[in-house]
Length: 390
Picture 1 (cartoon, helix red, strand yellow):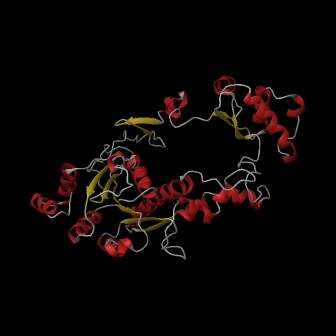
Picture 2 (cartoon, one colour; picture 1 turned 180 degrees about the vertical axis):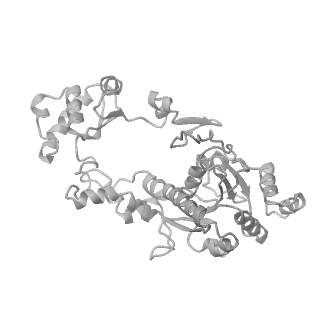
Picture 3 (cartoon, rainbow, N blue to C red; picture 1 turned 120 degrees about the vertical axis):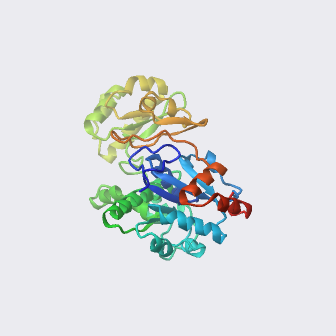
């Protein structure tokens, strides 16, 4: 552990003193790095010397917040040696390359764990380190397609709807990797032995479907879209358009909450007496809710239903969500260097996290990291002069 080495956001949070080396990648790997940095880890990101044509400037990418960055040419043996030296005293490493790439760079787990047996080596891929698909290209939509998750998302009679890249990249990928890193770090703290964490988005998105598989095993879920309790099939778990073209959400699953929703919405008694969980009743219940909700504006429905047990919330846009009173009270969004972004979560009573900062890079940052590593100022100057270090 490295309790004397603060992260760029300050050594606060339950992971203060943990050092992670992150090999720059896209999407889920930096999300895992963000999670670890948000909670106090000192995450040092190894960036490329030049950006790709579609790459966000790393310093202005929210996923990269609260890191220090070194830009190295990993095709250089001197740069690879620097990364090895960083890993020799680190607690963990995360990378998001296809299987075999880190080995070809000379930074595979066998080499790094031999030098630092306590190292936790986190690998983020779509298909995993082995299997028939392991070496093929893909993206979130492909991984959740193979796991079965995508099949379940969408309305009846329509094609599957990609749920952004939340299920594969971030829920089944980055957050799963962060969890795996913490589990392996706990094991290393007890045993002194590190290990490889093989995190695949196809695996993680399958895990996220555990409840749905449970419902299906108990005869409570049909294996098709838009006809079930949570997939827009049930009229009491859906979104509805309001008079002003906005939308609201209702999720009144429990009978007492459903009864309150119907009463407050002014649903006629003959419809309200229909059996809530009888799919034969759903078309009439849906039509009644649709007509009633379309008769008022979103603001009017907020006045009627917010603060009640109707299981209601307005559907807010990305620009609206940070300004809702509940989100403001919870401080769920922050503005950092002019960018509105989600705040770290969850919250801690004893080890509160620091306010995130944009990723820091440049000569001073590079020099500070390398001096901590024991690299001399003369060697740093030579690395810059040879183009190994930006």
